[in-house]
Length: 469
Image (cartoon, rainbow, N blue to C red; front, top):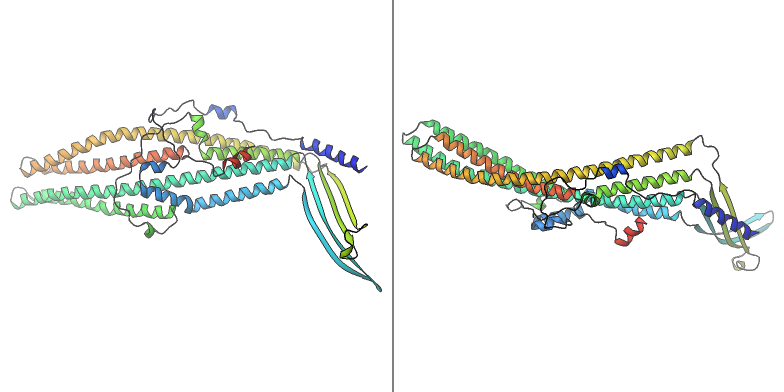
């Protein structure tokens, strides 16, 4: 008879576990339709390619590489995301424990008195229990797997964003240094013009208007320098925050040119490119988790089987434990069948279904965001590159015009208004060129960020494969 009971329980368990299953993730036709077959923005370079992993190392900026490396380990947002990943790993272990029986050891000893007699009792043993449902426990395990994938991708998303923020702050610091240099160089030129105007005024060749105009222009330029220097300090402070250190630990970085990104990046087709974005992978994992929890909610509509068993020894003395007659064992099976719950279980299924739809909407939004960010960055790079070409020509022309105007004024062949105009034009186009060169670097940073920053899973290959099974 016990064998018949065990066989019956096994058959019932097999039937229960096959009641509900979780479907595999697959993009819907609507989600596939939003992905273009090719990028519409101008191509960067169809012949060369660059791995976007650790993309900042190709910029040949040692300070930038050091700052990003520190941020990857010390930044508070990165630490929080790493802690979330550890939490998800532990959660997977907890969910997996529900798939196997639970066994606990027991032991007791005591003495009882009744009137004038007393008795001792000692026992040791193990108790086990196992709940088999219609697939809910396994679905919860799949949801925890998906949560782990999402946490892993979310860590990558944070790291990608922090690397981009550090690089942008570094570029803006170099831009501010460049703006200080441009203003100081123009200040020297304007000082020369002021000296010439003052000499001509003292010689009686012009009135004081030329001197006042020259001094006004010079002081306007001088007034811009403190703001640019403040921007240097402001971006240094931002770098300190992003790398979790005191501003004085960074110090004032030596003046260097604005970093120039290598122009050797090519893109794969949009569908493959988007798969490398950690936010897209996280959104995909969230859909998988939502589908698994929907399955778990459906399994609650079916019966569940719980098997309890115990095996032990009991005797009046410890030495007797194990002797004939001290052995005891038991096994008990029970079935839980939902009958009436005022529609709560089906309402929970409806809730989970709504969460699946919401997760799919977020996944589609992640795809659309990725497409927009990549297309925008590509267009920005193309536009900035064209603008730099024109501004470089404009700067050379403005330098020649300013030099000729100053020389002609000194010789009495030109009005001082022309000198002021050419100097202001030179200052303007040099500032524009500096800003545009920084914009090119910032646009490349946006592109690297939009491409996923070369993100790779922090799980090793075996762990990642196990999670995806």
